[in-house]
Image (cartoon, rainbow over all chains, first blue to last red; front, top):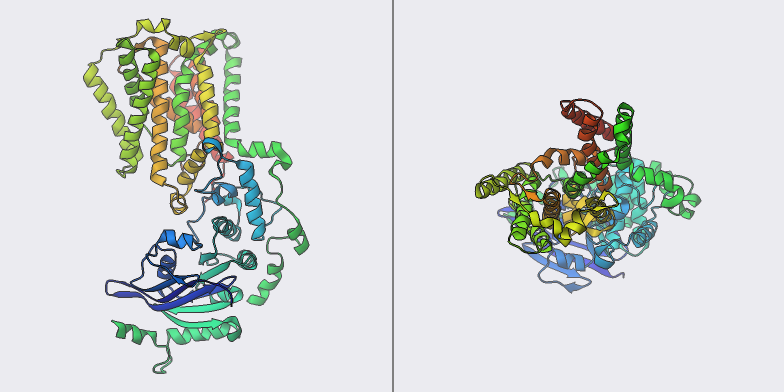
Length: 265
Length: 349
């Protein structure tokens, strides 16, 4: 079995009396794309914040490469190789691709002068690595000229430059057209081929179904389903399951997360 | 749905599959002239405005505009403006504004005058003035950044506050520095070289160094990123507040040098030193092609903007129009430049 990059065990998070997460288990292996699906308010963003160390879980255990980690924080998360790519506020759009990739960790020589040639060469290499080749753009092109999917590519390349082992993509395709979504998928597949892992978060089941090796469905702070790609025949299966979870059709005791949540209070 | 996507996945970035896989990035130097023009379009636009303006002046009065005296007088006062215009380009790029530099000019040059008057070497006076400028810049910057105040209002307030302080203590009295003309500092910083005022060489050196700082240094790179998207900069580990304070310190340094130079030109320090520079310097930054919204800008454009603004006043009078036309032409050039830059620059979001 592939190496386990990170594992969350029985993670709970409550804000006062309100439960955001109630005992979530989630793991990501090396070279795997895990699709995390959930409606608004399902606890996706809380889970991302816990992964990146910004939010501390109320209870539960975090294991990095099989070893439990104490005192989980943003620095530990970075050391573990976890990088989160947020959809909107990730890039400085008036700057070049190079400046965005090296933002905050510029390649400098004597007295802080930039090594521009070295940065351009390194940026080219990173972009090729994720399969972003272009006849129109250069690493010195302004990010604002790129399309939505290509911008995601720049953000992913930056995460790889930061030695990311697990890239968390927060709703990477939500605002994108089909062609742009295809570009993001292309980058994601290249990243997986390079042996890195991706946690692909979205609420569009079709998008997540097309790209993920494994699915985790989050509903009202609990994992409602974990399934391998091979176990789910089609996106429709997943949709039916989600609908079942959202509106239990009068079948008592079946995945009724609402009841357990009320019981937890 | 997934079926319609399959063809795209083969070559999502356009072209046939083999083509995209084989092609490298097109090298930036493929068409260096086109690249140069695109990279420097704001500065080149400002240069075009300047050339057109000078052409109009020369046609209006060829004799005056071919005499050296006219240029010599502009070259004496222009350097003072350049030392503040350039740091202000950094401030505006960072998404802030600094209106306190005239008072900083006055305050720092006052310290210079006090040190020289006390009989110390003018070099020591320059050092003291620069330290004063840095401290005032740090004070203003900290107030804006750590105090969370609007830079527009807070720096305006600091301008009045510091100027008021100078006036209260000096009660309007100026300080004459008669011994300055014999000093080494004067020869190095304020004399003439082959009939050219030597300040302009120092100012050009400052512009070139600052342009490199802006385009080829970590400081410039971080200033632009912070002005562009502070959230992203923060997330990428840049100390956003620190960068913001640094640009105000940079203005303090520039204002101190500018103030000192203006004192050395006149051999006299006035309590109003620097006051007249507020609006021309601000105009120069924006005439130069640095937009108001932050993230981008041009140091060289700002410098050309300062040259343009300096020549308006001299040029209008020399062209035979009365002094009443100066303000009108000032305004005309500013508005035309802004319209030109708006057409010339796309704003990416």
